[in-house]
Length: 254
Image (cartoon, rainbow, N blue to C red; front, side):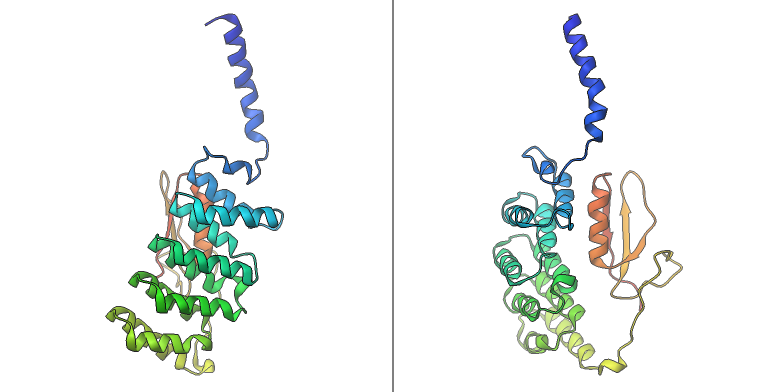
């Protein structure tokens, strides 16, 4: 290698740490060569108040519709849900009808059920109920029932009752009947649960529904945390940059 080439290589190595420490905007993370985990992190960033705006909105819509990775499409759609209003629900509804990924559709419905930006919007309940009636996947229809159960909106009772009687799948009918029995209880008789302690210990402390244990592992294994599904998904996005995968068991004992 020539002296000039050695000098150029040394200059590049010296400059690399400085470049690595420079803040990277979420839009810069979305370069064509970006890894899926980088695009997932960018989606989470675009949902934050400091980036939220028309450009972030349109970027998330494009990723939701066009990205080749199912996980990125889901991350984009979940981040888009943080934008309130009917326009967002319209985008999500169109996406659910076109999306081929069963897990993506299911997880998005469940995320919508508890998203603060749409908690008081009856159109969100109608959207989930529509998926319960129309989606071809049994897994997605079961997810829609889980989502409607989390919302506990009386507006969905008709859709749940129809599923309990007419759905072609026995598991869906049974799940709908169980949900009807739960929702039929007077509100005062339903147990109110306080949020679990952030210091809850897996195998020792209770993690009641609607929370569940969030397990993250990869090169290392982290202590499970008692979180909501949405919180576990956020943790998964954060852990992705370290090469860790997270799963939410959702089967905690009451």
